[in-house]
Image 1 (cartoon, rainbow, N blue to C red):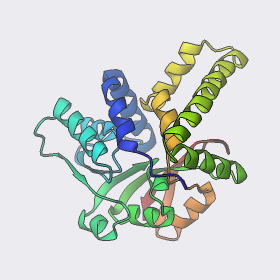
Image 2 (cartoon, one colour):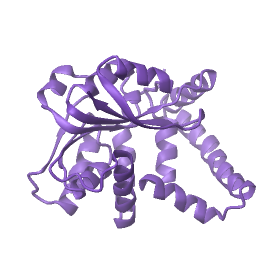
Image 3 (cartoon, helix red, strand yellow):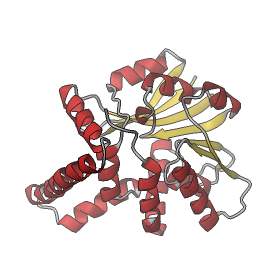
Length: 265
């Protein structure tokens, strides 16, 4: 069985490349999915804040931000970004916390926007994480989540890859040495097939959310625990709990995240 991936350690390696361009791209992605040019006067809860990039983006859009993560390194990352851009800002608070802790989630109060992008499927109990993420959503508030797509047997194979990665130094070296060249070759092949200049293809990836392709590859290969869900199952789960689906962006049935924005009725 694979060990839990050190997400925060990976985010700390990402921290030095967070610049104004990446912050701008991340901010634009929030505007697009939340259909809002500003979050002024609204509260924003970042569940599993990771690098803190999207907490920073929400704060730049004017929201009052609360960030938390179960990984101490991720908490430090978010604190570093706040120190750089919003030092001593009372409108952005950061703490340790676990979305699986129902008492903790209830203690947070209610928020206009609850954001949990690519987090809930790494907790080891996706169903409970989905339920707990809904607890702090205010009436008429929004829940913005991204969940790995269920590809059936293909997802089972990826789970095994992640278990090997987490088995120790040799397993990690084997997986990185095998799949990073494979992913790179796939990007090169894609640029040839689509007649797209490779640097432009890589820049397009960064434009989508301001993220780093290499750090996302490592996050994907090592990201364990690992659970998946079909889009219709996520939709029904929240529909039965009084939420309406406002927006949906799928990964086309393939590898990656399906993104959902729900509104509490």
